[in-house]
Image (cartoon, rainbow, N blue to C red; front, side):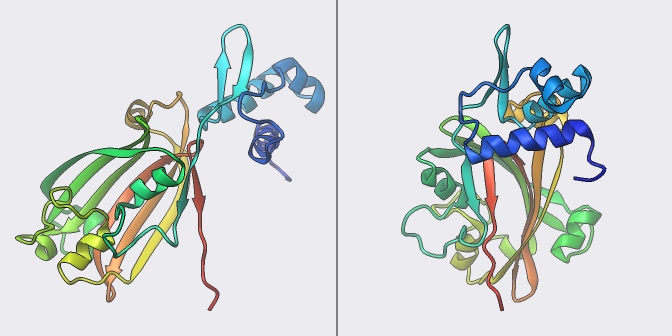
Length: 248
């Protein structure tokens, strides 16, 4: 790729080999000296390339031994078919993601009433300062932290209903919960980006320093009116994002 820094180009080659299975889980990566010879680069460049993969959480260093492809089961997030309206089976999208990977999905949560700041108010189409339900989550697959999320719902919509507190009822997932109060969600918009993890995210997700994470800004709407918006954080090495879109 033209103008791509050498360490990112090397990281891309190694990443492709890992994702294709050429370097399977448990395989040892070429040493820094090996990468120096193969790509005709300095040791610093080779070290930075490996640091990128460590930051993504897809390789681990073993003292005195080398760097190895991390043995993990990646969850698959099928964006198009994540939400269900039926209560047959888990209505939580995360619980289904985990079950699809043969793992048990659990989560920690904290809900509280807050006032919407300007960015959240704009995303929900409400006035700044309007009351919202804010719920923070940490999701785990077989006990390993794998996802963070903070969601917001307008209290004008959910207050004094059976879904007012997101985790108090038997139904999980925004679509199924909104159905329970007669609000039919008909669209979800997701904006995906990549950035360095914050110190808090590194601690909460057990990530290496300088890790990278996928972020998703998600908003559900019903008849054009936003009913929930969330900020989701996913470690790149633990989740595959799959988007299947209809062609009109």
